[in-house]
Image: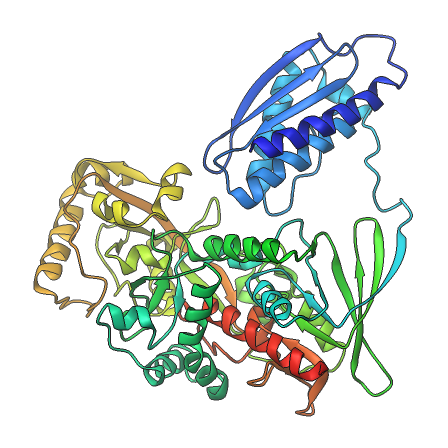
Length: 585
């Protein structure tokens, strides 16, 4: 945060001097001084300090410490610069950090109003921030490989490429890395790992593959599933080697055994891996070209990949290359696109990062790429609807239950996501409450962000919790007592749950979060083979084009098991890199 504040101060001095040089209005706009205000962000109040002279905003300091580190700090820097340039608080929010951005804008507005400003006057005199009318430069870059997308798959591929000594560029259309990987909160499925063996867990790659095929309703490509399962243990070892160990193992819906690997402290796997991948890339000296959107894949006269066109903030690029790795993610944040295939999902909230708009799929289609399972779109059953925040499956995997507005359980909470989502949608109001206790909170770090975001209702008694939820206290108390008896007997006669029953729910305070299904993952995408080569509509590889992660189809079939997306991005990200390396030799 200190580095961020230093950067903001430097920017403030630069732009403040420029602003002072301009001709001041005839009448003073502000009462000179420094003014402070704060507004609630996702997790913490965001603090804004603004200094003004009679006619100019001369300094903006924003403290977003405690917000999501990859976005909160970025929003603070970007909006500080924008407010200084525009001389008004009403600037564009940072995509992907909307809540934090709006909190900054609200606090900045209050601070400026305290300084005597009329915000309407500031808006009327808004200064030009530049933009689409500003002429862009043109640049041509020669390289061996272009990796499009700096999410989990793209970053894994980039690390592999660097370790192999290859020349490449890594493009990211958003102003930050991570993509949908940052949204992953559970863990990574892997079988026959050294962690499982050390913890006495018996598993096999064959069982992993069988669970995945069953969970995907057998629509999956068996060869891709087998590849993922067979290489999963090696992927865990590779993560160990780059400082991204996932030693905590628990159960996830659709698995036969404890298989989902997570960080030691129980934190969300996505943010953890993005942090570790980013640190590794920084250590290796790999630059990510942010705010640079790939727009077209180029081929030579023989149909081989030969380049990529991309648009940066100030420059239009042509990258001449021998191979491209598509790691652009799915299309769960593009309602226009997903409603083409699933009109029934119109208006459904999404957990997806804002960059998940299907760009890579469309670029590949333009070269004749085939699509697989494109209509298969997964709902996640535990999404807080006002924030679109996903409540990790690990909460249920570690012992939480779901109850409806009548205060009773209605399903095995650890069935596959599509089954649990369907069960919720069948309840009155089409929602449920996820219920857990202090003991579960103490053992799962991911819960802390839900508490900080004020998503939880809590009480020292289950009856008190019921009253806050508008549920009959006696009914909810009986439901909890019945569940605790199931845990004691390790038997759930009503719904057949047999996992995630390691601890009862008897430690106050008790917590509940209101949840309902939300769009979470698009299982379909471009067709690939086991070497991550993109396959065209004639069944042939497109020479030099590889893909990994949610941009592809075939791995997950009709329903993705929790923990398989992270396995997908790490395993096929590495495969795509190795295939590109072999191709350009």
